[in-house]
Amino acid sequence: MTSFKGTREAYAAALMDMADEHPNIMVISPDSLKAMRAVAFGEKYPERYVECGIAEQGAVDTAAGLASAGMIPFVGSYAGFLTMRGGEQMRTFVGYTNLNVKFIGVNAGILGGEREGVTHQFYEDLAIVSSYPNFTIFTPADAAQCYHAVQKAVEIDGPVYIRAGSGREPVVYDVDAPFAESGITVWKEYGDDAVLFSSGFVLDRVLAAAELLKEKGVNVTVADINILYGKDPSEILKVMAKSSCLFTVEDHNINGGLGSYISRLACENKPAWVTRIALTDYAESGPAKELADAYGFSPEAIAEKVVSTLKK
Image 1 (cartoon, helix red, strand yellow):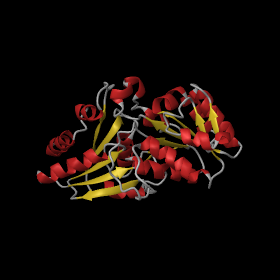
Image 2 (cartoon, rainbow, N blue to C red):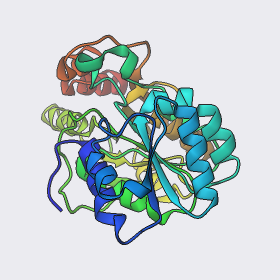
Image 3 (tube, helix red, strand yellow):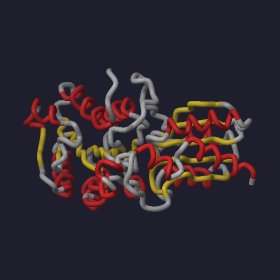
């Protein structure tokens, strides 16, 4: 497997690589084939590509019908257009019936802000999908992980939501690193002063924050959570048990995503102090790096939050 420019390209490449082995894979497009970088799939397999036009609800319904007939449909579009416009259909016609439909939502988070603005950057999608029973939620940290997540989704019999980005995702994982079925990958184990959990495309920033903290004499553990609200959180709980002070960092609204997940696990298993670093308001448009820094995701801001919290 080669490296990819971004998660959209990784999604399209994974579909192409699986197409011959899984002839029941189909691509359902609500006028999103170019946005999903999947034009090559439509050209090579025209009989396995359905264009629904700008109609997310219709695309989800189409996918549900195909899944009920034994196909494995992938519906890809902007994260908010799927989970908001098509949310009722995802809930009722896919989640409730537990159909084998795969969704991939792009432009999740604020990193695509300067290209298409606040109407096309979404940080509520995980909160919405996590309230639908039967859905498996993947939050890959970079393009290579997204590639593996798409392949892993085919192995699951039931609805899957994969969170993807805008093409500005930093490379963190080795291209051959597997998508952790346990839902967690531990990256750094400097100590147990705190545990920093990352989800999605901020992992590089969390890792950099751990280095800054180490220089200050604060030794932390860093872990990437790639499956939210999974059926078996046992490995996540083992890492949580390392410290009584936990931090979550995610490019998502503070409610309903990683922070809510870790908080719930702490409440139900081993009480701990959980500090959530996430978005608390609507974001503005702007270049990806500047936006991330402005909203508290710079390594320096993350490190300072850890230090100030530990002082309490």
